[in-house]
Amino acid sequence: MLLLIELDAVIFSIFITRVPWVAAIYTEGSKLCAGSIISPYHVLTVAHCFAYTNGTARNEDLYIVRVGKHYREPTLIESPTQTRMIKNLILHEEFRGEEERNGYDIGIIEVNEPFIFSSQDGTVGTVTGWGFLEEPGPRSNVLMKVNVAFWSRSTCYHQLPSHFTETYFSNDKICAGYINASRSLCYGDAGAGLVFPSDERYYLRGIGSTIMSSDRGCESNSYTLYTKVSHYISWIKSHISRKESIPITFRTRSTGFQSVVAGCALPNHIPHGKFNLVGKPNYIENMIVPRDSALELKCDDGNTNSRYFYCLENEWTNIKEAKCNIPGRCSSLMPTESEYYSCTNNNNKVSCKDPPYGTEAKQLCYRFFTNSGRKVTKCVAGKWNAPFTSCIPECGRKTITSRTLIVNGEEVQEQEYPWVVAIYDSTDEQICGGTIISREFVISAAHCFTELDGRKKDINHYTILAGKHYRSKHRAEQNTQESKVKSLDIHPEFVGQIQNYRDDIALIQLETPFQITGQVRPICIDIDNLYEEYDFIDGVKAVVAGWGLSTSGGHATQVLKKLEVPYVDRRKCKETFGLEFAQKYLTSDKICAGYHNMNKSVCNGDSGSGLYFKTERACRYSIINQYFHYR
Image (cartoon, rainbow, N blue to C red; front, side):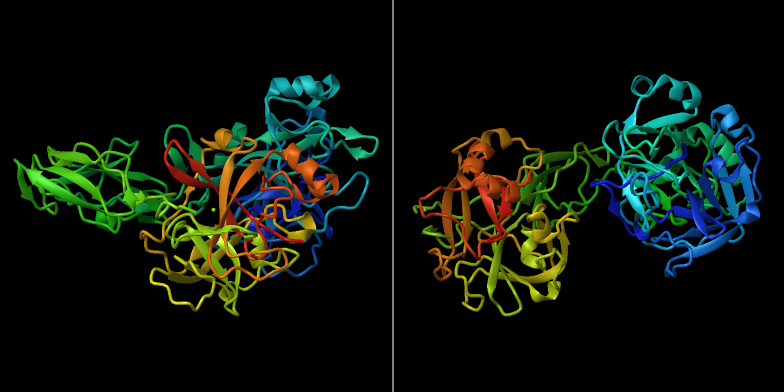
């Protein structure tokens, strides 16, 4: 009836550096349970792993704790692994094991030496462990994860048998998992942490406690019961905060993050302003306050708006920038690469560097930048009465109006589509296309940068050129900009032809950001899917541009060409290509566009090129997809 993980198609092997809080607990050489690091000295787990069925604690000397493990085998050497003995084993005082339905199933392990934390970080599944892969069957040899859904108590009561809920569903339990999905916890890893993301952190909400059993072992088609961590916060604090150096962080509704460790000294007040400690009435200069505390800087009347500073890593963020302006004047408005300002006072032009009371400031965007927000503000009582929004690169605008329509496509006028880039390999051969989405980033297809099995190639082999009309890398063109690749992010689920090029998408960060000009500009991205219902209608026309083959089996075109293609719904696409092709390549993340038997299509060299839909409401072009792979 004790649990952890069962493997199916949606559970993945993960590296321990992505879940650095996972602890493996061994006894007599074999893995027994799991736990979660909550401080350098403490691991949170379930009580029943360390007790007899009546709740009596076993000898703590029988156990060892290892962190940084990826493989289940205790003797396998792994460089990040740290091993600790148990100094003190604390089981909840009310835990009575099976006699009391496994209520109060929570325990704290205090280790003999503190864990040494590293700076590695990453994403994580909801539950992790080394449990059985199938029922019956072997345990996993590597750390696994599974995502599970949280359910209300009423849902669990209706879905689980009454004999199980009446016996084990005590008020200190929460319910998570799936019914009839073969996704659950299983024997061998009780104590695994159930974590939820919030505010770019992961929070421990539950500890694997109880699951239904079946004649095959653990029941994988049922919900799992987890000990509710929030039910025991006071109990955890009472046993952990005795060590003054423990950096454990709790989150509360009223004050955000509370730490039992002093972190930052309150700074002295500055001229024309004072600091306030958010959520606290008293402010004593040089007093030590916990990490994650927040400071508010309030300037005297007639000065700038308030600013906030945060205690992170025992230092206040950007505290050296804390200052208040001379009373009566507003903060300076300095030009940037995208915008500049014009200031007037009593109809006279004045400097925006030190504007006096009553100054009216107008924001102006440089060419090829735009701002749909507020453009005028006024200096009142030492502060601007309304904030500006930044000017951003104008996206999706063609450089010129085309008078003309890469198999049998028509030549593009020079820089007609300023977001198109050419991607070259180490031999200076143009291999793929891509689309500019910002000054620093280009989007393309993952298979342009990987082996057939999805393994990433060396990014130093690639060069990105924008503002190109001619295919040749070495042909001189006045408006071309060039950059190497700074970083390359391939979709984590992309494995090339193994999964029929599903998740075929790549994000390229440029080593040298592009300068926004009339010939080099980004495309718009419909992030909120505002126009998808209008674009994805059978027959709606879109545009693709590239340097692919000009005829099937022929030579690559030497100039950028475009092709107008209609969107094709999935049903018609399947009928056209046949069931075998559609089942293999028309994965759920793909859309279909083009002609059938019209000798017009994309071809080799067009991989990664964007499919652009014109949005009439804004007179812009938006990227909807990028492709292509050829068998």
